[in-house]
View 1: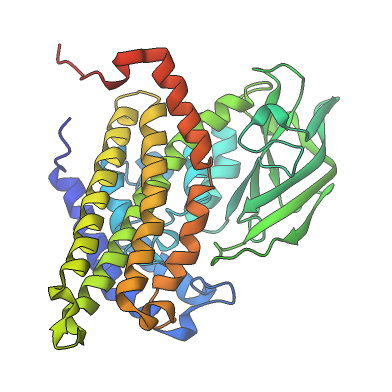
View 2: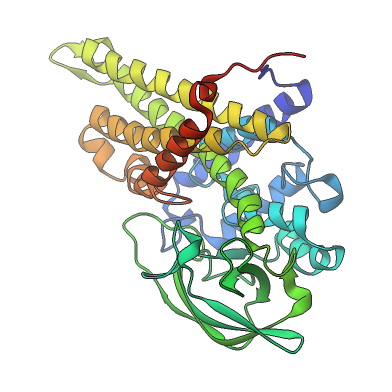
Length: 401
């Protein structure tokens, strides 16, 4: 495995670094740039998205024919990490969840007609999207086998009944991907559907309050009471919903890790800068061994996270599922992000706990990382399953042919 960036990818990283430093970090410091839900407001967001598109930093992972830049997964790891040096970063480059994952799965699995109808408007930046899968208990969460939302066939349509919740971005989304049961078959009982915000037969019950800052559109509870979806809006085919989920969530979990590494590095940056300037009892914080140990440990943990993320990206890039690699990266980086924010706050003291820096924003945001796209415990169960199946081969070295 050689993670050396080719010049083309390194150029993207450098240009993203410059964009974040020049445009996004100053916006973070401007209270007027924030919306009521603690994210970038719509007016500056529109300006930054237009600028990013004009500079060729738009939809980096999509194919050129889809409107993207065609970067492979390993290059995306470096680019997405650079984007999230700013908490405003990913959405400005059209690389934020859930749109990023939705665009990827539509590009891979959609028909040409579906790409024109459902993908192109998201790529253009004119439309946002959501992925509706999770349900309140006793419905499906990490275990889709528990799913209770149903779609029954009625002529050329499917009629959907059920409830979803914690659907990220639903409050502003126009295009939705919905997972529902079409039979009780354990492997072929789920189907993915495409529907529009204006279609009748469903509603947003509420925008669920959360402890952390929110993505645009929040995290919503949805109720379906007779939503009719025409058969041409089935994604892939009836009964292949779990394939859609697998195609979408594996890379999406990894792109979360890429972005979280950028935030973790930002925490270290803020802490290091403050430690170099702040003195106590005649000694700079940076000269205290306890502070050096904290920052040195974080530097190591971040590099471990980068290697795990890059290895998983490399495995996906060469056509593998990277199931265990993604799970290891997801668990490690999610916990690392929380630790980095915590250490950053501790070194900054009251300043870190205040809103004079973005550390407290990252700290609250970080707690969800251990839950979204599979809780830590679920991923560790996946790793145990792989360990049992592979035995000592779990740690095998790849051998050149």
